[in-house]
Image (cartoon, rainbow, N blue to C red; front, side, top):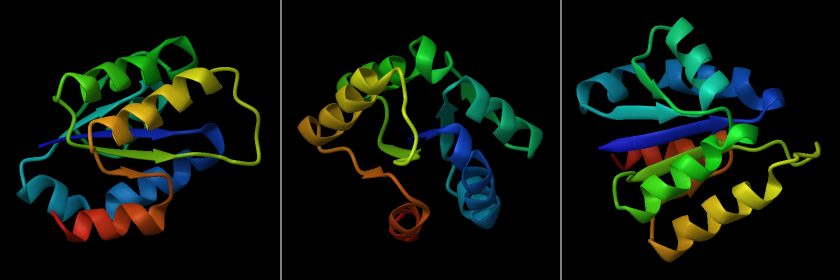
Length: 120
């Protein structure tokens, strides 16, 4: 199973804490993580094996969207910061739309991500 992890700057610490909380599940279930650039670097520093793509504003969100469309990514955890502006908002919207089109579970906050992890 491939899970994409993305977190806006104001949510990166929450993402790492979430991953730590579910470290046993992530390693036991043979889950492969992919991530946008900085989120992936932070996850690696926390001890996770992650395939890093480009940073979100430089095309990482679009790369993950393509993987969703290709059927390679099974779940997306995108901890968004709704109180900040993001120059790559069109890519974010595309990713969310493709998750809906291809029926891929998408969590935009830790509470929803936790429910999805409990179903794995």
